[in-house]
Amino acid sequence: MYSPPLPRVAHPVTDRQDFGGLEASLHHLISDHHHKSLGLRDHAEKAKKDAIRSATRVSDLLVDAVNGGVQESFVNEKRIELEIRALTATIVRFGKQTDQWLAASHSINTTIKVQSAAWAS
Image: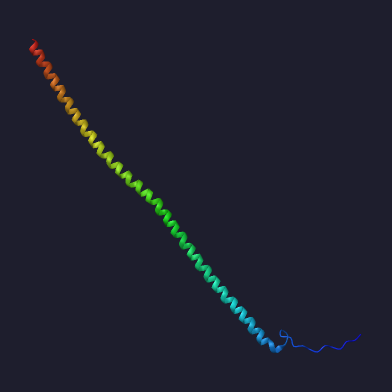
């Protein structure tokens, strides 16, 4: 069975005259893809920079919170040290006064004993 050849139908991909349109479409697709890739890359880079900025801000806030407590503790420590010095000076002064009172009372007791002995004789 022999069948006659079918008539040729124009095919847009294989016909030589349509290659110009096909190349232009391909070029257009590649160009669109390239521009979208650049846009995505720029968007990703911006998101990365924003994330780094946010992380840095969080880190700074955490450091400030910790340092605030440390600074308050340091100030309290200095106040306590000043109070200790003041109390030490007061204790030394009271010790000297106590020694003076003891010396005076001892002197008075001695004088009274001597006078009592003199009156008794």
